[in-house]
Image (tube, rainbow, N blue to C red; front, side, top):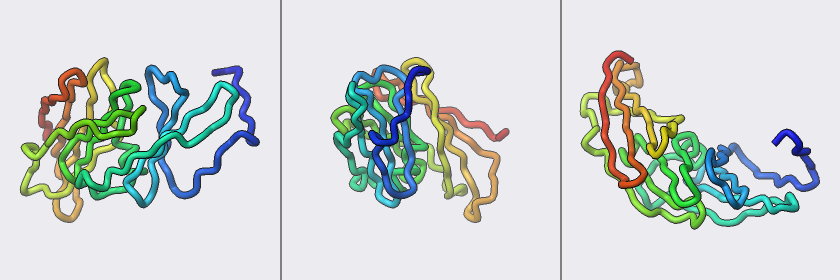
Amino acid sequence: NAETVFDTSKAVAIPGYTGISVPEGENPDNAFFVGLNPDPVFQRYVVSDAGKVSLDKSIDFTNTGIGTTGRALMRASKILSPTKGYIIDANSMQVIVFNPTEMAITNTISLAGLVEADLPNRWSIFPVVDGDRFVAAISYYDADWSAAAHTKVVIVDSKTDTFVSDTSRDC
């Protein structure tokens, strides 16, 4: 808030090239999240009422089949509540559902039906939250990464962990 004074003596040095995320909604533990590089790991830090920052838990996404860093995953994630977070991974064509308080994977949602065989490269970053929905765009590219004017939007209903999608060839 506007009255907060940054005290470097209470800061925590996090080495490396990381991604940082703060939940947009309810955040009872004053938590923030760090995506590591090169490992596909998120770390959960909490800030006490006294301002002390400490590492609480971490989660490793290695066994989910993703092929990217925690820092990159952080750019493809949103935390909707203390118990529900989403990551879209366009490489493995799935949405990973996790509990950001427990730092546990709770579900995966396959997007395999959205693969375009003639457009083998995909990219998805900076999803948004729309009420109870996680919304992400997947941009498709040719084999040489040239633009293909082909994008799909994925909308996940956080109450049911189901998705709908639509395609645009105007982007």
